[in-house]
Image (cartoon, rainbow, N blue to C red; front, side):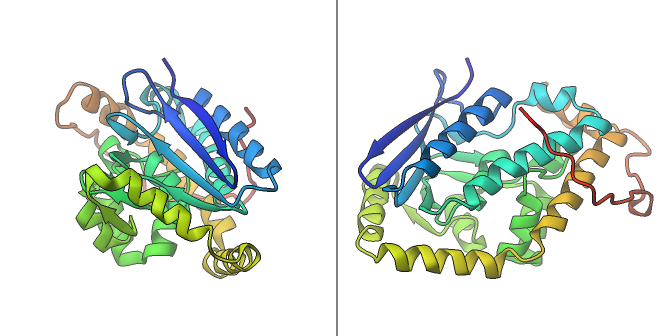
Length: 277
């Protein structure tokens, strides 16, 4: 059963809630298309001032659908990455303030969604990270770029190169989340944040957000294209096949040799290829 998006409008606040029967929320192709439609709904609502991405259950977002990753090739992976980037960019460009309410595990594509949001409060029991290297991949939906640009190269190296899911307290120190609250009071803390934000001047907040985004996202366009290229190049090594298989079989990967394609062999074509779903 795919993860569905419930759109809940309450005055100036819109909640986009991920729902799955087993409580493990996945960003499958169907879910991404549904999320894109929900974002269009938000864009049409002139009264919306705050958008909350939230979920209930065992995870906030566990990342991409593994069967989709398994089916990719070096030729199709770039289009897949650019499509995910386009979705995350649509979140980053939303005029209302965006809150990613991380109540539980937030991994891979879920973390990339969080990095595209303005604010990232987390429950104390949550874990957050970009574990793609454990699958033989890199974050391909903007996570490599945003983690580096927003958190700094040294922090991005620790997050991406280790592929660790960090407990909320450590994620706070790294900047992956911006506040941590006790599990039992997390929902009320998010509600208090929303209430506070709604007391600020709407036009001033929107102008400030626009200015911050302009200053912090310079040169993103070329960087995203390079990220998509590097994501696709991972498939030339054979690592994703072994990495995903090992993850599903709950064992340590045995990486193929030679596993690394020389960076000098990877040419960067600046011509964008966008996934149309």
